[in-house]
Amino acid sequence: MTDTSKTSAGDTTTSARPEPTDLELMFGKPRLMKGEGRAPYEFLRSKVQRTLAPTDFFGELRVQEVTDAIWEAQRFKRFATLLIDTGHVMALEILLQSACWHSVFVKPGNMARDYYRGDPKERETARKFAASVGITDDLIQAKALSVNAGEFSYADRLVDNRAIKLQGLLKEHERQKRRGEKARRSADRNKGANDNSAASAELPATGTK
Figure 1: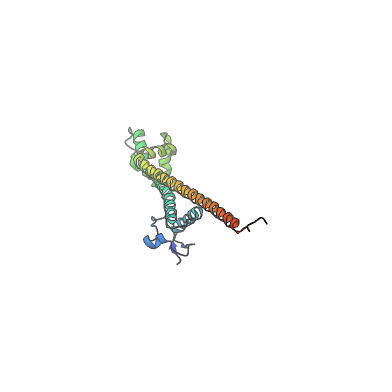
Figure 2: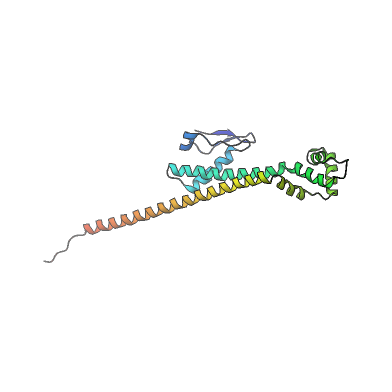
Protein backbone atom coordinates (compact mmCIF):
# COMPACT_ATOMS: atom_id res chain seq x y z
CA MET A 1 0.00 0.00 0.00
CA THR A 2 1.28 3.46 -0.82
CA ASP A 3 0.45 6.41 1.36
CA THR A 4 -0.18 9.56 -0.66
CA SER A 5 -0.93 12.68 1.35
CA LYS A 6 -0.77 16.43 0.90
CA THR A 7 1.73 18.49 2.85
CA SER A 8 0.97 21.90 4.30
CA ALA A 9 2.29 23.50 1.12
CA GLY A 10 -0.26 21.59 -0.92
CA ASP A 11 2.28 19.29 -2.57
CA THR A 12 1.47 15.61 -2.96
CA THR A 13 4.01 13.41 -1.21
CA THR A 14 4.38 9.64 -1.48
CA SER A 15 5.52 7.81 1.63
CA ALA A 16 8.66 5.71 1.37
CA ARG A 17 7.12 2.97 3.51
CA PRO A 18 5.22 0.59 1.19
CA GLU A 19 3.27 -1.26 3.88
CA PRO A 20 1.49 0.02 7.00
CA THR A 21 2.90 -1.04 10.35
CA ASP A 22 0.96 -3.25 12.75
CA LEU A 23 0.21 -0.15 14.84
CA GLU A 24 -1.24 1.63 11.82
CA LEU A 25 -3.38 -1.37 10.96
CA MET A 26 -4.81 -1.30 14.48
CA PHE A 27 -5.07 2.43 15.17
CA GLY A 28 -4.59 4.17 11.82
CA LYS A 29 -1.94 6.72 10.95
CA PRO A 30 -0.95 9.18 13.71
CA ARG A 31 -2.98 12.39 13.45
CA LEU A 32 -1.04 15.53 12.68
CA MET A 33 -2.12 19.09 13.34
CA LYS A 34 -3.09 21.48 10.59
CA GLY A 35 0.03 22.86 8.95
CA GLU A 36 2.20 19.84 9.85
CA GLY A 37 3.48 17.79 6.91
CA ARG A 38 3.10 14.03 6.69
CA ALA A 39 6.37 13.65 4.76
CA PRO A 40 8.60 15.22 7.49
CA TYR A 41 6.86 13.08 10.11
CA GLU A 42 7.44 9.89 8.10
CA PHE A 43 11.06 10.90 7.51
CA LEU A 44 11.60 11.31 11.25
CA ARG A 45 9.93 7.96 11.91
CA SER A 46 12.15 6.21 9.37
CA LYS A 47 15.24 7.67 11.06
CA VAL A 48 14.05 6.47 14.47
CA GLN A 49 13.20 3.03 13.09
CA ARG A 50 16.65 2.59 11.52
CA THR A 51 18.29 3.67 14.78
CA LEU A 52 16.24 1.50 17.14
CA ALA A 53 16.02 -1.46 14.70
CA PRO A 54 12.90 -3.07 16.26
CA THR A 55 12.55 -6.85 16.12
CA ASP A 56 9.07 -7.31 17.59
CA PHE A 57 5.77 -5.55 18.26
CA PHE A 58 6.99 -3.83 21.41
CA GLY A 59 10.01 -2.60 19.49
CA GLU A 60 7.66 -1.06 16.90
CA LEU A 61 5.67 0.50 19.73
CA ARG A 62 8.85 2.07 21.08
CA VAL A 63 9.65 3.46 17.62
CA GLN A 64 6.23 5.11 17.52
CA GLU A 65 6.54 6.55 21.03
CA VAL A 66 10.04 7.94 20.40
CA THR A 67 8.91 9.47 17.11
CA ASP A 68 5.90 11.11 18.75
CA ALA A 69 7.96 12.38 21.70
CA ILE A 70 10.43 14.11 19.37
CA TRP A 71 7.71 15.46 17.07
CA GLU A 72 5.54 16.79 19.90
CA ALA A 73 8.50 18.44 21.65
CA GLN A 74 9.26 20.40 18.47
CA ARG A 75 5.55 21.25 18.12
CA PHE A 76 5.37 22.69 21.65
CA LYS A 77 8.57 24.68 21.11
CA ARG A 78 6.93 26.19 18.04
CA PHE A 79 3.81 26.98 20.06
CA ALA A 80 5.90 28.74 22.71
CA THR A 81 7.45 30.99 20.07
CA LEU A 82 4.03 31.75 18.61
CA LEU A 83 2.75 32.74 22.05
CA ILE A 84 5.44 35.39 22.27
CA ASP A 85 4.75 36.60 18.73
CA THR A 86 1.02 36.97 19.37
CA GLY A 87 1.73 38.99 22.51
CA HIS A 88 3.67 41.73 20.73
CA VAL A 89 0.70 44.05 20.11
CA MET A 90 -0.52 43.77 23.70
CA ALA A 91 3.01 44.21 25.04
CA LEU A 92 3.59 47.36 22.99
CA GLU A 93 0.23 48.79 24.08
CA ILE A 94 1.20 48.30 27.74
CA LEU A 95 4.58 49.96 27.18
CA LEU A 96 2.95 52.88 25.37
CA GLN A 97 0.45 53.34 28.20
CA SER A 98 3.35 53.86 30.59
CA ALA A 99 5.22 56.16 28.21
CA CYS A 100 2.27 58.24 26.98
CA TRP A 101 -0.01 58.55 29.98
CA HIS A 102 0.34 62.35 29.86
CA SER A 103 -0.67 62.66 26.18
CA VAL A 104 -4.32 62.82 25.12
CA PHE A 105 -3.40 62.59 21.44
CA VAL A 106 -1.71 59.19 21.51
CA LYS A 107 -3.96 56.16 21.70
CA PRO A 108 -1.70 53.27 22.83
CA GLY A 109 -3.95 50.56 21.38
CA ASN A 110 -4.19 52.20 17.96
CA MET A 111 -0.47 53.00 17.94
CA ALA A 112 0.41 49.38 18.78
CA ARG A 113 -1.79 48.04 15.98
CA ASP A 114 -0.29 50.54 13.52
CA TYR A 115 3.20 49.43 14.60
CA TYR A 116 2.52 45.87 13.47
CA ARG A 117 -0.51 45.91 11.20
CA GLY A 118 -0.83 49.37 9.74
CA ASP A 119 -0.03 50.44 6.20
CA PRO A 120 3.60 51.42 5.47
CA LYS A 121 3.06 55.08 6.45
CA GLU A 122 1.28 54.16 9.69
CA ARG A 123 3.96 51.64 10.61
CA GLU A 124 6.70 54.18 9.99
CA THR A 125 4.97 56.80 12.16
CA ALA A 126 4.35 54.32 14.97
CA ARG A 127 7.93 53.04 14.90
CA LYS A 128 9.39 56.53 15.02
CA PHE A 129 7.18 57.44 17.96
CA ALA A 130 8.03 54.24 19.86
CA ALA A 131 11.73 54.87 19.32
CA SER A 132 11.33 58.46 20.54
CA VAL A 133 10.08 57.22 23.92
CA GLY A 134 12.77 54.54 24.23
CA ILE A 135 10.74 51.51 23.18
CA THR A 136 12.86 49.02 21.23
CA ASP A 137 12.03 45.67 19.61
CA ASP A 138 13.99 43.89 22.36
CA LEU A 139 11.93 45.67 25.01
CA ILE A 140 8.70 44.66 23.26
CA GLN A 141 9.94 41.07 23.02
CA ALA A 142 10.76 40.97 26.71
CA LYS A 143 7.38 42.46 27.64
CA ALA A 144 5.58 39.99 25.36
CA LEU A 145 7.28 37.15 27.21
CA SER A 146 6.11 38.49 30.56
CA VAL A 147 2.57 39.10 29.26
CA ASN A 148 2.26 35.46 28.15
CA ALA A 149 4.42 34.07 30.96
CA GLY A 150 1.74 31.65 32.15
CA GLU A 151 1.05 30.19 28.71
CA PHE A 152 4.75 30.15 27.85
CA SER A 153 5.52 28.32 31.11
CA TYR A 154 2.84 25.76 30.29
CA ALA A 155 4.28 25.16 26.82
CA ASP A 156 7.74 24.88 28.36
CA ARG A 157 6.48 22.22 30.77
CA LEU A 158 5.03 20.28 27.83
CA VAL A 159 8.42 20.39 26.11
CA ASP A 160 10.16 19.20 29.29
CA ASN A 161 7.58 16.43 29.68
CA ARG A 162 8.31 15.12 26.19
CA ALA A 163 12.06 15.36 26.81
CA ILE A 164 11.73 13.29 30.00
CA LYS A 165 9.55 10.76 28.19
CA LEU A 166 12.08 10.52 25.35
CA GLN A 167 14.95 10.04 27.79
CA GLY A 168 13.06 7.22 29.51
CA LEU A 169 12.26 5.51 26.22
CA LEU A 170 15.87 5.66 25.07
CA LYS A 171 17.13 4.33 28.40
CA GLU A 172 14.71 1.42 28.13
CA HIS A 173 15.93 0.78 24.58
CA GLU A 174 19.54 0.66 25.80
CA ARG A 175 18.57 -1.75 28.59
CA GLN A 176 16.81 -4.03 26.11
CA LYS A 177 19.82 -3.83 23.81
CA ARG A 178 22.21 -4.82 26.60
CA ARG A 179 19.95 -7.72 27.61
CA GLY A 180 19.88 -8.94 24.02
CA GLU A 181 23.66 -8.74 23.69
CA LYS A 182 24.10 -10.57 27.00
CA ALA A 183 21.70 -13.31 25.87
CA ARG A 184 23.57 -13.68 22.56
CA ARG A 185 26.94 -13.93 24.33
CA SER A 186 25.53 -16.53 26.69
CA ALA A 187 24.11 -18.51 23.75
CA ASP A 188 27.45 -18.32 21.93
CA ARG A 189 29.29 -19.60 25.02
CA ASN A 190 26.84 -22.45 25.44
CA LYS A 191 27.13 -23.33 21.77
CA GLY A 192 30.92 -23.33 22.03
CA ALA A 193 30.83 -25.55 25.11
CA ASN A 194 28.44 -27.95 23.37
CA ASP A 195 30.62 -28.06 20.26
CA ASN A 196 33.69 -28.85 22.38
CA SER A 197 31.83 -31.62 24.21
CA ALA A 198 30.68 -33.11 20.92
CA ALA A 199 34.19 -32.95 19.49
CA SER A 200 35.62 -34.67 22.58
CA ALA A 201 33.05 -37.42 22.34
CA GLU A 202 34.04 -38.12 18.73
CA LEU A 203 37.77 -38.60 19.52
CA PRO A 204 38.81 -42.29 19.11
CA ALA A 205 39.54 -44.10 22.36
CA THR A 206 43.18 -45.10 22.88
CA GLY A 207 44.09 -48.40 24.60
CA THR A 208 47.27 -50.29 25.69
CA LYS A 209 48.22 -53.47 23.87
